[in-house]
Image (cartoon, rainbow, N blue to C red):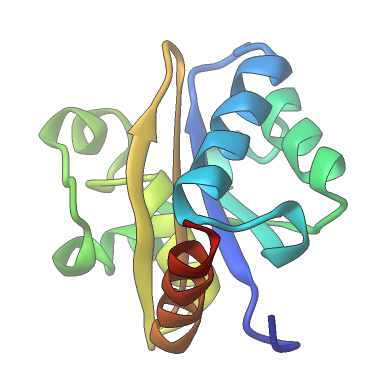
Length: 144
């Protein structure tokens, strides 16, 4: 992969979700994208989760920095979400934590490469540049 085109992993979770659950979900998102941990450049989430051990553990697991955004910043991405949720909005003030955080972190030209996937207590999504999405698709096709 080219430098500077890394994926952003958006994460959301309930309070006190086990780190193992969040990390396993993140690994699944990478696998779904045909990507590896080396393709990841950032973990992003809602600022209300800035002290959540599972999200911090996931970033540590992948050796990437974390960034947290307020609900208004995530809500600004609502039109680009694949899976907006009224329930999430009622709890957080934004229609999507994982997808919104991934898109904000990856930038205005980014697309969802892996829309929201869920586990029992967490959500994950991956975003990156369109060119990276095509590159990962080509790599996956070559692996078949």
